[in-house]
Image (cartoon, rainbow, N blue to C red; front, side):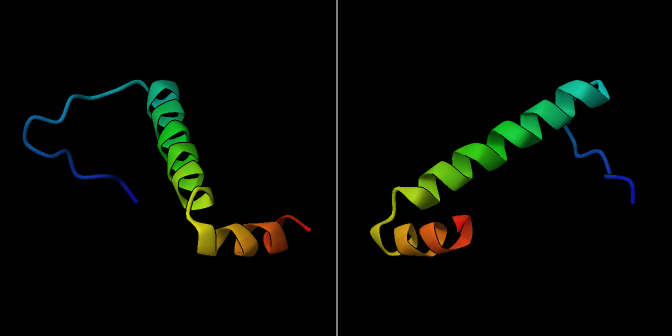
Length: 47
């Protein structure tokens, strides 16, 4: 499945795009981890 370029979308080399996606995912997970409710869920998932 190919992403459809959005207006003002600049094409990134694949590696750079993947790194960006990973960084966004990590920051999102970190944000989730900082929520008190999700803390227990993540502890459960890490077991």
